[in-house]
Image 1 (tube, rainbow, N blue to C red):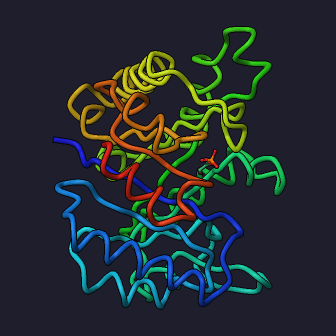
Image 2 (image 1 turned 90 degrees about the horizontal axis):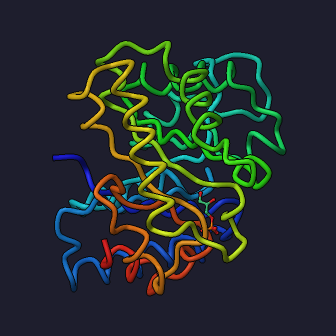
Length: 253
Ligand code: 13P
């Protein structure tokens, strides 16, 4: 059985105290209504991670993610944070290859491949993001586009490493736009991603990889978007900044 995961990507939001307050609210709601088997992940900015990690050590279902890391483990890289550093404070997941990092920080497939390896070398779990821009969707090339992203940045991994991955499908046209993929569009792409993994690594391994959907997921649409058999949860942006909305999404999985 694959992990069911709802992860909140705060992006560059929440100063220190409001961030901790948000986690306190999430934990309070989680203790009142057990989220069942769903893993709840909080991907905060770096400044909160150590404290959230301490808070999460008290609860079974809450996990901590970073939003990025550097591919090298240490050295003269001013302003960067390494995977061993994240490991040292109890972080468990690292988002790699978010479309905002690909676009604004020009992160290449090759760089992402190195980052994924760096994360796995620390026994941390990469949440690897993929997804097509609107023009690619309009020309119906989204399957080819996403498969290429996976091949370019993941297919250097051995089968044992692939078992550890989480993949997040986030169509760029749905991020922060209020426009979600329909449940049929999400399911079709998730099945295609799983098929692509199966062709490279076999069906058994492909069936173990959780594939999350991200892009304008809200309490009002989450149940519908999560309904496909290959949709194993969500990567939530804006709606993860409010505990009630975030937990409503967790509940709908
Ligand atoms: P929104 O939920 O704000 O559209 O963001 C999705 C996302 O980019 C999560 O990583």
